[in-house]
Image 1: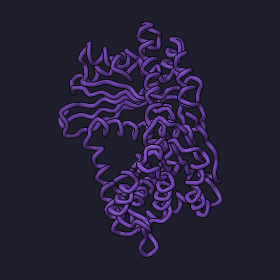
Image 2: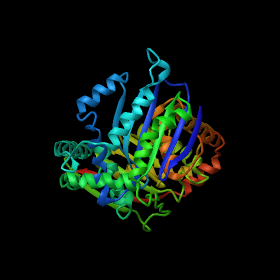
Image 3: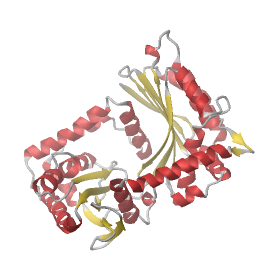
Image 4: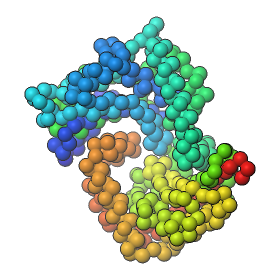
Length: 429
C-alpha cells in the first residue's frame, strides 16, 4: 500500500492510495470549511442538492442509471464534523478496473460523474432548482429530528451543545431545524458558491490505478475548481480547551417522555489530542477506561454493580474531549456518576493490571489494523490527517500504540477534568 499526498491547485489536494487489496475503488471529494452556526445549515444541504442531478444527468433517476452503467457504482452525499471543521461532499465507490468484464476504464468515467455533480448542478433562474432544494430541505429536517428520537445520540448531542456552547464544536454538523426550514434556493446556492471559492478541497482515491492516471482522471475536476477559486482558502483551526470551565462541573438536566435516564459526562483531556505526542496513550487510556467490552466502565459499572444498561467512553481526538455515556435508571443517577468517577480515579493512580493494559492496547491496535482492510476507514483516517496537517500512517501509529506504557496511560488519565454533566430525565423525574 503506497500513500501519496500532493497539492494539485491552491486549496485543492489529493491523497492517493495505490493498492490491489480491494475489488472496488474509492473516489471522494470533500469540501472542508470552518464549522459556524450561521453557515452550518446551508452548507449541510449543499451535497444533498448536488446529488439530485447535473446538466448531463439532471435527475436522481438518470444519475442512478449512470451509476448502474458503471458496474453498480455508488456516489453519496456526506456531511461530517472533525473538531471544528465541517466536511461536505460526495463519497464514491466503483469497481476497480482490474475486475471489469472487458477491461473497461471505470475510473475516468467515475471522475467525470463526480466532476459534473460538483461543478454543473441543475439550476433554475440562476440558482438551485426549487424542487430539489425543498425536497432535500425536508429530508434534512427529518434527519435533525431523528437525532432527538434516538435518545442515546440525543443525550450526547445535548452534552456537546452545553459543554461547548461558546465554541464552534457545539454546533451540530447538520445545523438547526429552524435554520434549515428558512433556507431558500438562493441561500443554498450562495453557500455552494462560497464553498467552491474558499473551502479546502480534499480529493481521495484508493484503488489499483497508478498515480499519474488518477491525476489525469481528476484533471477536469481540478481545472473546474481552479476556475471557481477565490483569492483565499479557509483556514482550518480547532480551539482545544485545556481545562474545565469552573472549579465544579456544570450540571444540565432535560425532562422528556422517556422511561430510561441518560447520563452523559464531558471531560476536557488536558490538551491530549491527535496532534500531541501522547495521542497513542490517549487512545489506549480510552480503551482501558470505557472504550471496549473489557473496560473498567463495562466490567464494573455495568456488569459487576449493575448500575446502568450501558456505559462507555469515547474521545474526540481533534477537539481534545472525552465523553462518558450511560443509560441509567432515574434513581441510580448519582450512584452511577460516583462509580464512573471512581473508575477514572483508579486509572489515574495506576490501579489497573498488566493484563488490562495489554487488552486495551491490543484492542486499539486491532482497530487500526482493521482500518487497513477497510476503504471507508482509510478514507476517514486520511481526512482527519488532512484537517490536522498530520502525515503519520496507520502503520506508524500502530507502532507507537504498541509501545504505550502504564505510566503514560495514567498520566493521560490525570489530565482529565470533568467539565459538564448532562442528565436526561423523565417528565416526572
